[in-house]
Image (cartoon, rainbow, N blue to C red):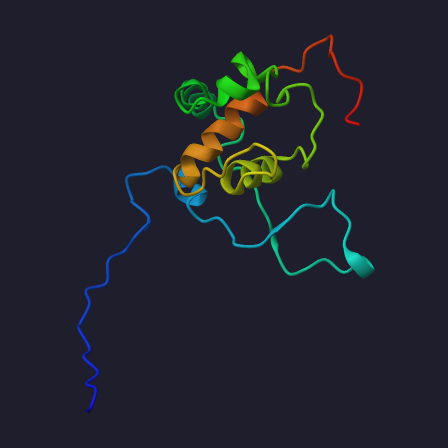
Length: 153
């Protein structure tokens, strides 16, 4: 019996393409590199793997921080990290202490891919822009004067 290979013409659809009506920062937020370099991590043999730094295109944008604040409650981030990110079941996001790197790129990576022992991966649910808004909101929170922990064990 012979098998036939059937080729069906496909229409190409531009997914995640840029919209000229969007601000440049939002368009840039859609271009997340696959490999991300975190300068605070050391590399074996002092050679870093090929990667790009991940920079928050919405950094310092008060509108993005406000949208991130609404998302923080809506996505139930506050359910684990407490209202305002002060910590609850999950660690505090405002005390300046980070288990997996504290720069914007590391925070994006944690939200996008999740972390072992409790942090779900939201990269399949939230858009890159939405994740950057959450990062911008967390970054906009002041570090409290009194921090209940000294260091991670």
